[in-house]
Length: 402
Image (cartoon, rainbow, N blue to C red; front, side, top):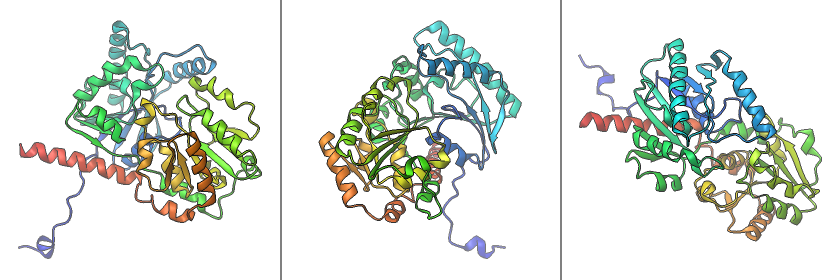
């Protein structure tokens, strides 16, 4: 006999993909700043088990102190057992030689990494595995691990990074072999979709609840920024060679009565370029801050910056920090990065003088911070995982009809 439930209006089909699965995640180092991969995996870990494989280097190391320290840490971490860093997220520290132009070393890396990852999978009892690759260097072993599905989630023009051009063939092969390719920017879609017809765009989300706390009365502004001269023009993120330090200098000199605050570590490839700011008295380097404290620093900003140079790397970027600034309710000024144009509360400048004019405009006519934050509330990481599930469900349904 049919019940009322049987005759009720059908509900929207549940997004069943990526539920109750074992997932491999080849990404950056877990201890690094939370990036798109971190946020996506934290959402997925609520219903899946994740084996997070720390970074396989994309470039040969230099002889710099920072790179040598990183090598030492990698070697030390390799000896550590697999551990659960968060509920359902298990960490593996692999070891590989970053020399992708040498066929012998690539072959050695393949055999070694396959052994390392398979051993970890056996220890955790992984089966019916989804391999989600965020790091193109992992392309050399993707498909060799017994995985059921292979997803390449491409969030950058990786071969445009300094020292990473040797990855080109490995990444292009990964594009072609993947069951699904996800890209995070329109520019990436335009340049990559010819490799694989099953390529889709999912733009970045934001940890909205976290950055919204910048608007809470109880959130206290940290002491190292609280008493700096106003306006405070702020930036948080990696100070790498894609940051326009000349533009930051011009901005600081124009607003010499205020403060330009830079929060983040200085990358090896930017150590020389950043020196242009050494003699600018109102530029303040506050160093890397814990992710938990970033909303408190955002609360002190009067305007936030995304001062990227324009090149192949940045034109394909989808700067996560911009959505974080907006979630904190901040007026934002960016250089002409295409993915910033789709955000209505981000002012996009065409050149250096226009950038400074737009900073002036953002300071003079700020929108209510609550309204800026509310406008991006719907772009949560949970919503982005649902987008991914919709794509996977549609692909599965299409295959079933064939």
